Structure formats: structure tokens, C-alpha cells
Amino acid sequence: MGNRAVITNKEKKFGIYLHWNGGPDSIEAFTQYAYICGVRDPKQQDDYTFARLTQIIANYFDGTLSIGIGLLDDLDCDNHDNGVYVLGKGWKIVERYGSGCKSESEGYEVEAMIEEINSKQPKKLQKAFRVNQKRVNNGEEPLRDIEYMSVPDELKIDEVRDLKRRLHLVEKSLELAVDVIKDPKS
Image (tube, rainbow, N blue to C red; front, side):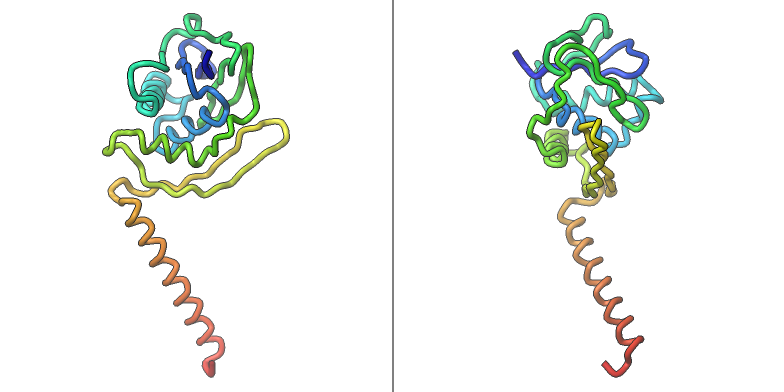
């Protein structure tokens, strides 16, 4: 019982076992959050990459259960839930295999789950960010590409909202100035 999955890379030497939240929406949210945090690309440094991804996921689950890490041969890859996700360059899921391999959505909004993952991280590691959605569905791949804009760590979310409001006011002022220059009589 669970919603199990294993996450690995193209070398398929070791992986992360998830007992819960192993569906496509969750895996996409975990990997996109790692990307937002600047975790090294899965193709560059496997030991650091998987250590940090494990940390992010374990912080999300809290407690001492629901996650494991080990040699791929020792993990439950034939789990009859979601199988194995293989990560490639750019935190993309490049392959899935194993029994189960459910491709349907878990019903999570990926963006909302990313915010939830962020809220479960220690305060000093939480990120302020704005999601700029750019969804792609080519009919074959159910997962989406999402583009993110990171905001410097020292900014609080309220400060980001205030900056966005100020930027909007500056844009409106510039539009008015351009209108006056084009038609000084108005």
C-alpha cells in the first residue's frame, strides 16, 4: 500500500525510494523545486544532486519514514505503483519503467505543491519565487515544462509583492509619459 516510486538517473546505480507521493505531479514538483533551489543538474554531480533532492523530499515528509536511498538493485523498483523515474539533464524525466508506471495525474497542482514543498523546508532554506507558467503538452508526455524566476533569498514574499506593485506603477507612469509625448495637447 502506498503511492511508491523510485527516482534515479541515467547511470541507474542508486536511487531514492518514495513510499508516498510517487505520482507524476509530485515527482515533477520535487524535481522542479530542486531546480529552483539551484541543486546541481542530475547529469553533473550525482552524489550531491541526489543528497540534496533527498533532503528536499525528506523535509517535505517530515518524520523518519516514507523515504529511502540505496543502490538501485536493492530498492523496490517493481512497486506496482509508479515504477522508476529516470532523471536527465535539466531535471527532466527522460524515462519511466517498471510495473505500474501510472501516467495519470494525482490531482495535484504542481505549482501549489512546489509552494507546499517550499513551506516544509527549514526557514533559512525557503525560497521566494514567482511561477511563470509555460505549459507544454505534446500529447505523448503528460508532464509539463514550467519556467521559474528565482528571487534573491534575502527578499521576503511581502517585499516581492511590494516590488511587483511598484513596478506596475512605474510601467503605468511610463505609458502616460509616452502618451503625453505623442500628443502634448492631451
